[in-house]
Structure formats: C-alpha cells, structure tokens
Image (cartoon, rainbow, N blue to C red; front, side, top):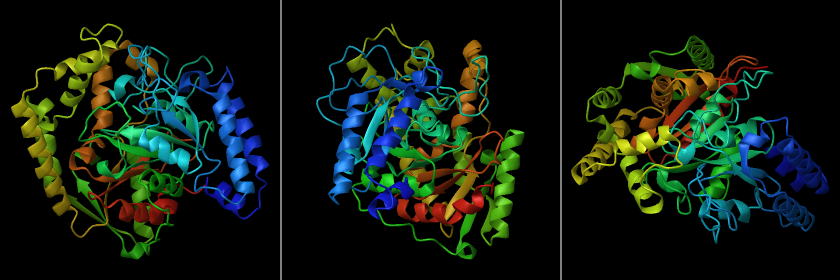
Length: 456
C-alpha cells in the first residue's frame, strides 16, 4: 500500500497500472476454485472498475487522495450506498438498500480508496470464531486441505482478514467489539488495529455494543493500518515517530493472559520477547491487579452482566428483526437470548464497572509504553471440529476472546503484529495502549514491528 501510493505520487508507476492491478485482484476474487466464493457476500465489479478509473484520472491530474487506488473490502456490517447491509445474516437480506455510505466508508471513498466487495462475517458479529452456516466459512490462509478442509479464519471480521491474506485486496474495514479485528488478523498472519472507540464514527453500522464497538483496519503492515486509521479518524496522515528501542518499556502482565497457551503460541511469543529484549526494549514482568480482578469477576455466575456488552445488541434485535429466532444461526440466537432479561440495574452496574476498570488500567499503565500479550491463546482450530461439537465451539470462542475483549472494556487501543516463523501457524503479539493514546501506540508498534516479526 505504501509503495503503491508513493510510487504513483513520484510518477515511478504509471496510473494505468492501477487498472491492471485491480484486474488481477478481481480475477483472484472471482476464481471459483478460491476462497472468494466464501469471502464475499456482495461484489460489484462495475463499481470497482469505476473507482479504479476515477483513481487513474486523479493521479494523472495530480489530484490523488491519500488512499487513491487502494482496494479495501467492507465488512457486511457497514452501509454502502445502494447495497443491503445484512451483517452476515439471512434475516436482513430483504431490507432496503442503504441510501448513504456509513461515515467510515464515506471517509475511505473520499480519500480515494476503492470499496472492494462486502465481506462475510460471523452472523451479527456474535463470535470470534468466524463460522457462518448461511454462506460458508472462509478458510484460514494457513492449513487448507486439498479436500476442502480448513481452519477457522477468526471473527467476526472473517471475510475481511481472508480477503487481505489471499491478496484479493490491500486492506479490510472491520469492527472490533471484543477482538473482531485483532482475532482474524492474528489467525491469518496480518496486522490489525483496534482504535479507542470514539476515534472513528460507528454510525451506519449494525451495532453489537454502543459502548464497545470500534472501527478499525486489517492490513499487512503497521504503516498500512496507520494510513487507513488516519483517514477513518478524519485526520491527516503523518508517518510514525520511530522510537529508540532502548527507551521503550513494556508491561508483561504475569497471570491469566500468559497462561494456558498453545505450544506454538507460547514459543512464538517468547521468541518475540527475546528479540525485543536483545534489541534493548525493557520488558517488566509483574502481576496486573485490575486485570486479574476482572478475570476473577468474569468467573462469577453474574459475569454475563458484569461486562454488559451484549444486552445492547439484544435490544437492537428485538426492534429490527423477528423475535423467535427463525432464520438465525442458532448458536448466535442462544447468545442473544442469554441477555434478553438483563435489567436496567445490571446495565448500570456494567457501565459503572467499565468506568472503574478503565481508570484502574490507566493507572496500571503508568510508566509503560504498552502492555504486551499474545493476541490469542491458541492457533486456529479446525472448522469442522467446531461445527460438529457445540460445547467445543462455545469453549473455543471463550478462549479466543480471552486476551482481546478486556481491551474493549477499558476502551483502550490495541494492535496485533505477526510474530511466527514463515510456514508455521500464524501467531500474533498484541500491544495495548491507554484510552485515547492511539498515536502513541501506533508509534510504538511501528518502532517494534521489524523486531517482532521473524526475519525471512
């Protein structure tokens, strides 16, 4: 992404190359033997080619925007003018098309980006697994079998991550309520950025939680994510300020977040920390009391309402869809039903808990540039195993969300960066920053990215 924009601006690449490049991306996305059939729920080839032609013209006229010619897939959660927004579900397919772009999509388009298809997702964003029984599940970029078997892509922005990992497009627009950008990015060896919630407008997107929903990008590098984030936030992009690694101080929270890891995750993350230490980064290992208190609270019977995230979505479903669950993925419907009797008092408690937790985590980060954890506790498991075993599905979903969802509760910002060796199962290392410290975290991530990644 960076090289395309810079080369076109410097006239090192001819603007007509945009069309040739997009021809290749469209052909790959439409290849019936590839994952495109499961990645895209809508694909307007004519609109994509119109966007490419407009980008070519702007480059020729020296009027290109910061993302001109960049293809970005759009999660089926966001309104795109003239298209139906259905959140990976069949129950909303009869809705009228959106009359306007969601603000996030409008900002991308105004910057010259080319919306590149509507991507598959967990129905209504209700899991970190990425399985969709209605439209098929995009297979993880790693571990695909010739017999059609595969591993989960992660969710809920499943199609978005695979659209980037398979080279169909340059980046993906996703949402993150408990990890839905970071989880599929990590599972597919990509970079994913979850900004502070208020940083990017969520209007024009079907909600999961008005408090926790964040809008963020999935791409191949930290810089790519930073460029897209700047546009989404309505800011002018500025290159990251690279820090001297010897001045950086990271908190490794001893306890839950580093416990119970798959062998591959433990090995890759430990090796990444050793590379960081060898480069001069100070990594402090200590218990983070607010985090451990949160996980203890989560284990209590009332924990479903301690966070209070999903009761908001239940209200939305009661207003906008049928109330008997017909047509839903029944595993999604079960989760919706779990919070249908949430009381106002429980919601008030959840909001108060969130505020207190955010303050406590802000204090815990004092003196540190970021918290560092594995993005996920496991490598991507088999799709079929989770389809066949409902108990395993829910247990795996909880395990997947463990290391990411608390960041949304504190309303921090976070980025996952791949740290696995080439050919190994994808593993991400997660960097977490304070509420509204997005620029600082992007600087830290950019400074550490080369060291976190395994040199090929």
